[in-house]
Each structure stands twice: as C-alpha cells, then as structure tokens.
Image (cartoon, rainbow, N blue to C red; front, side, top):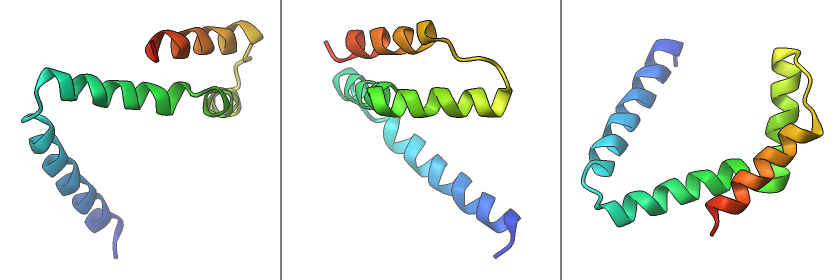
Length: 78
C-alpha cells in the first residue's frame, strides 16, 4: 500500500464520518464535543500530551500550563 492510497482511504473515511456528523442534532453534537474534551483533557492524557508538546516544540511546559489544562477539564465535565 502506498502513502497516497493510505491517505486517500483516510480522506474517504473522514468524509463519511463528516456526512454522518452533519445529521446530528445539537444534543448529539454536545455529546461529541464533551467526549473530545474528555479525551484531550483527562488529567493523565493531558500530562502526556503536554510533555509531548514540550518535546516536539522545544518549549518549556510550566506547572501553570498543566493546571490550566486541568481547570479546562473540570469545566468541561460539569
């Protein structure tokens, strides 16, 4: 399998998902957004993603940034 065919398959899957997503009512959209927020902001995953960002960008990650992520997480799960 070539990189082009892999990308083409992923694009096709994304378009199928987008078409389904466009049929969702506001309640379902809210559920999807909450699930995405949980996935990103769950404390252990947030710490991991923050550390990866530091490694990838070479910038420092302060405890304040981690705390900001945790605050966003707490707000999102209310």
